[in-house]
Figure (cartoon, rainbow, N blue to C red):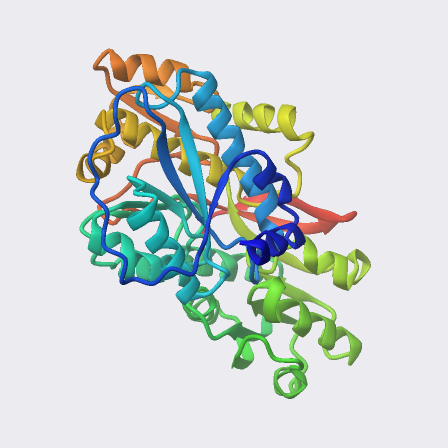
Length: 421
């Protein structure tokens, strides 16, 4: 545990431990026997699992997202609690790896006995946890950020949901945005993982269909020291820009840095994995002036404004804090499902999620947990309207969502519009 705490402090979230969020150890193996999912005793604490990629390639995303977890937890406990007691969030770290995700999810489900898991975040870690742990044990899983198209066809018995649009959608949107910017020829490189590969495929198909030309396309492996050979291939025919679909905390930043240092590219196009402050800190904002990015976003709404006011009041600003709204919405949906189920019975919690997320029901916005609890306790239906949009799940556990167009401004990212295919 000492090593685990040291890792978390280096990731910038030591305050989470001090605040009392229980961090689960991640080394236990699947041989642990599944725990029962009996209803929590009235007035007792109810645990909600938080399965996040705390360490690994997206570690820099995590601190503000954990602030969203704490924001939702405080609102719930200040507004009457969960099932007559307190809600307690229990955090498991996937370490950004599939095995780490399985180990951490196993601990949450079989030892902590949580009735619902929020997470994971990366597509690969979320799929690993779902296939190996949450689906077999019948535990509801809600990811704030997993975008792989594989989730749409996942045989999950309706236990796995996400509140961001599929990369099949983002790929088409990215292609339209690139063409709308007048860029007719690009090179494309993408990481060999569950996030980047399908997104790149969707982009390439839509971009070529729209009249664009991909001068060179290279799938690359993660964690390489250099991508000089790949970049030489990509730059050979002098395309207008380089599309990089990868995590900035892994191969993304290295590729952009080497491309600039060797004068191969000066314009880069990326998705949410690359839209990381780490990229600006390493590359410098001046070197990214002509670059742009897409990322799941939120339409303007009263619910979005309510969340922004809550988050800003607690943590000074919401600017440049990616996926904080999705995180808050996921925790609120998890808690609403438990409250609606009236117990921690896992099958009942799963069945309750669609009841609190989809119409009909009285609208519940961020900051209205107390109101929601009172309505549920009175036997009335609620319909959660989230910080990032309406939570109307389709038959596959997907929501439509929206995609934002981002540019670098100052030392951060600015959304300059929403993109429709």
